[in-house]
Image 1: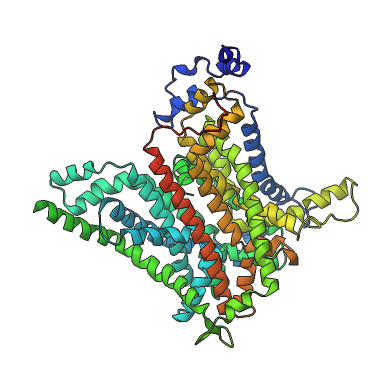
Image 2 (image 1 turned 30 degrees about the horizontal axis):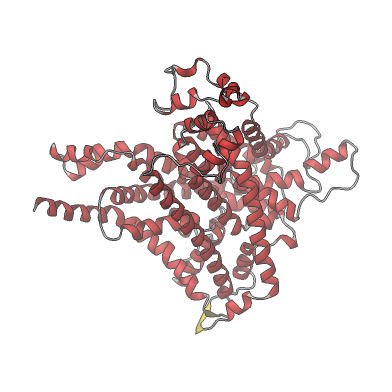
Length: 300
Length: 300
């Protein structure tokens, strides 16, 4: 009786109107959609929703401010009028910046491709075969993800100095590949967890060679994991400042290093314009890879 | 016979697939890390580097009250920022998991997260500095004459740290809450629990793994933070990361830097062990169907 008269229980009936029959329009896979829709909380102004909106605002407001002031006519943060001069400057009068950008790009592509190949292969090896050093590889691939960047940067700097490898593009490439590997490995492993091993047995039974199994069965099925890994690796490489800071040498300035020197030694509003360009690029990236966002969220 | 052969073949293939990454990480992660451990017990070289002589000098130097103060500050800042971050991220993860627009919200969190960290720090400098957005706006409105001291203090460091790492907390929380069966909440409320009660007693225990992951992925990077205190902090907001870098680049005391790095590594490793223990608990618990939390005499 008490439960029936409980106002809280009564109110709850409002939460589940006609949604019990699931409309088949969900794009998030057939399994999850009904759960989320049937028990959808329809109070849009609930505490958690308000918090989410506030936090997203908190995340975006600083970026908005920078973007708005990239169109400011004067140098400071006092609005004096609309102007595109900082964009002109960014495009035509920032050679060093573009050179740094090119360096970043080269490093990002090379390190993420190498990391994706090595990491994916390793994930396949670990998930599907049993051998002695599995545990070792799992630990070694997990630690770099959790150690603070400063530690990885310092240890690499000391290492490269000790073995007398000159700091430069090559050492940055090595460092980026190293911190990208664990993420690719994790993403592909997660993908493999959902994979049915019997498909491989079937392929073998039907006479596929090891190589055919790899290229015709394994690779296509783990592609989403591999793609998310590659995407993650590229963005992390483009983004990294701390580790790069330690292992870079003369002539190997990357974009984050260049931005750092701009912040430290004289801010120019060109940096505002650059911010907008970068944010726009990230938005396009996120939009075009929106299918993988959930997989990526699961790994970070 | 056939089975044995297959096992052998599996072992060989597993090693072939995993070896490249294993070797890479051993060479460029584990060996550098071991060098740090070794260096922390050696004597400081005159111009950087080390001399091959066993000593505990670095560890004695660490006990210097100045360093101890920085150590406690780092611990305090990291703990405080982590608690706030998790408290903000929990409702966000919950709202995102229950939202029908999951991918949209994921994008909203991932876009700032992927934006170059230096750009994000710069955005805060542009907002908080004495000629920044807030001060200029207030001056224009005639509310203040002198600039407010918004930057280069502890408050700025903590705010920006939370800003930088909140996506690290939201993403794992979202992933775990998304897997949670919300019918359990409905059941709890059918049984007369209030909404907060059902969340604390039913949801929280079931997403403990995600919370621990979020704590680790927030606390460890903040504990090793370097860029944020450097760029938005004052002299009294130095953290361990800054000391390490100074010891490497300025004072050239590599053993001391190594000893500090070792401390951070140990703290991180403890965190990881805690996380793995929770995960192991979790998967053991999964084998029993539903978790019911006994409150001592609370529920009917």
